[in-house]
Image 1: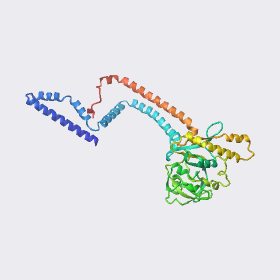
Image 2 (image 1 turned 90 degrees about the vertical axis):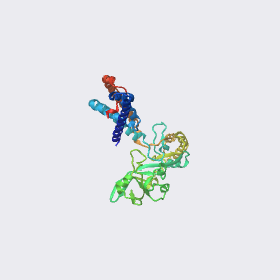
Image 3 (image 1 turned 60 degrees about the horizontal axis):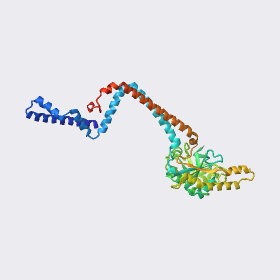
Length: 405
């Protein structure tokens, strides 16, 4: 359609110029000039016809697109004239761009991508470092979580979670599933909603509450054929009947990179899923991951300073409750631990801690390869330009004429 309009405008322009030349020639003939001489005088009065056409086209709408299309056609013709050079340029550029794109995709997924939750930049992970100040350990006892939840001044809300692998029975098939034990504040703190039903609420995490579970969208589709009436069905886990309360939004794959739970259950039911376990009461079993949402305007350093006294009080309480046969040296070492608060916008990931440095090294190497690629392309283009210097020397300045259409 655009080409058709372009041809019509070109035809209108040619007719207008011919009409102008004919009128001017007629005026010259009335002044006594011969027909041939009058036509020559009319052309001199009008000026360079090609230049007049170029100036007229410049006033038309879409001139920039026309010039771009012309440049692309010219580039295609030049590449067609030198196929070997074009192939070398394309392959060289593809190698450089492809390597960087592939590595950036992996780096973005592992190191940079934030959690798909509400304001992920406000999330922090609570961990602990030993007296040697080595790598932080992001695991805490449940009793420490209770203290952080009730006695901090920097978090608007706090959540806790831990992985589990109970056996689920669906129909006549029993198989282990990837589950997460989560606090009642888990979904509210993250700001994650459900596509069916409701999430786990604080009331579900109280002692004596009915066992409820929230399942992932993938688990819902795989095990329940995406049945819309899945809410209220029973889901036996380790012999305990859980009532399905909701289906998590599929945009939320999980709080840990590379770990997508199938089922979420309240953390208060841990002792029922694992009978005989005392993890909820123990101060020496470090098994929970704790994530907090900072209040607006609270920096990481202030949060860590605020949690320090609470954590030290927890450590002293744990030492007082420890068995008397534990050596005093171990108790002193235990008391020298310190709380640490880290950025949690991208979630917690063992893959991130393990592959951070290798990925950064590979990304730097890929950028170096891309720089070498650009230098090679520049060298080839310069060599080609030198080979065409005679051609360029006789070319008129400016853009090619639109008469090439």
